Image (tube, rainbow, N blue to C red; front, side, top):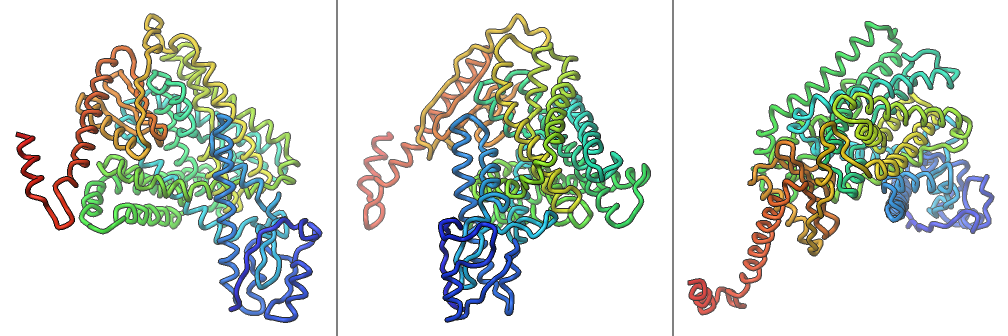
Amino acid sequence: MSSLILILVPRFALGVDPTETGEHPAARDHSTAGDHHALGTVTPNFAEFDVPNPDPTSKVLMLVAQLALILAAAKIGGWLCEKIKVPGVLGELGAGMLIGPFALGSLILVYTHHGWVPLFPAPASDTGWPVSDALWGIAVVASIVLLFVAGLHTNLKQFFENLAPASLVAVGGVVPPFILGAIATVWFMDNVTSWTDPAALFMGAIMVATSVGITARVLGDIRRLDTPEGVTILGGAVVDDVLGILVLAIVVGIAKAEASGNEIDAAAIGITAGKAFGVWIGITAISLALANHIERLFKSIKYAGARVGLALGLALLCAAVAEMFGLAFIIGAYSVGLGLSRTKMAHELMDDLEQISHFIVPIFFAVMGMLVNFQAMAAVLSFGLVVSFFGIISKLLGCGLPALIWFNKRGAARIGMGMLPRGEVALIIAGVGLAQGVITSNIFGVAIMMTLVTTIIAPLGLVPLFKGGPGKRGLEALPAEQETEPIIREWPASISHFFVRLLVKAFEQNGFNCYEETAGVVQAQRNDVVCSIIDREGRVIVDAPQRAQADAHAVVAEAEKVLVASVQRAHELPLDFDDNGPDPSKKADHESNSA
């Protein structure tokens, strides 16, 4: 095999007509002298590389080049968005839209021994899949990792403790959006005649999702995680995720039943729902029952990286099992993560998976952006605007009105706005629907539009809504609890995470239950008192209400004492050794000093 040369350049820089596919004239001239051959139209799977003989190396070259550009664009896009106080996931999504086959991707050329070919070729037709099978496979694995981590983050204790208000808020955030999404699809799509059509059901499922990560980050930044509204929003988002996964399982089952030629009626929907619920409950129940045994097994294998490798293997296995039973991959991954969330190693797994997630999850969001067909989306702009409007009012009213049982109008508005952002969950559901051919590219574009609108509006609305008095009934006389100063400690980023772990341990010793809401945000709860621990790359913030200030200061002091003692012990260890081993004289000095 001849050597492969990778050069990424814009097509127009080479003087190539953007409407043409194939290789640069220089490559065409060169092809007569070697083993190069001319290519006609190139498809996203690069099947043309296999003519006349299979050439997997060139396909791997294209995949490596694609991943290089995707990672760079996603990270830069996320960074730019966070610079302007917009969730980074939108930057990763936008980066994919920009470099995708329907935008600049088909204009960027890569030179191989086949000649010049587009890095992201556009599909031959509107129904063609825009990315290669290999790249899509990596994106699916990324979604499995993302939902596995989401399951690990779910706190079952909090889930059950806040079940009443959180469940009512979550149900209000599931039923109205689902109905409005399905109705809007029937209204605007000529080929969809009933709300039971899988395309309408998928749009309803997309509308259901709530992004707990985005909301938790915003509430953490404005120091409102520990408010009654904050606890209810996060609890509702957890229940909403569970219900959303169940809705997705049912919708996927109905779509596959219809694709198999089975008639869909009320009885069939009931059977499919029962099957989906049974499989989901089965995976979750088995994971919960075997969680302690799985933890002991993982810890008994003394090999570098064994814990995270085995955990990921288990997540992939359960994802495959879910797909075998007609559900989506992500349902199995979320279920096993939920089962392992109550183990002691859950936090260790989150730490292990953090860097893996930073690498692979942006690929998923970027690939989701690359699936957006701007031309198809432009044709259904009015549909997208209506769905976006429905996406806003369905959460504001659906979650806000039930909250009025416990909250005043201000608190209900906060809860409705906090449940608004769709984020990564909606993108995953939309990707599942597009991959299975249930929704078309124009419906997928509408889902992207709704996700962008709701995810941008939520942070902008939450900040002003939380300016004012308490939102829970009966708390009007306690506004001072919202005005306490946070406890802030600056540490090198390399040890701040260790300091947070010490804080968590100290809080637990003082009777608090601790759980991690999202990366970098931990809540400590004792009865109705909630404190927050926020790690911002070396800047550790402990936020506590007035009645817990003494506990918070004591916890911080205890954690600092343990940290300083640990650093001193680590610093003293080398003093007892010289180049030839332990130095008895130094050891004697230390012992005498200790005495």
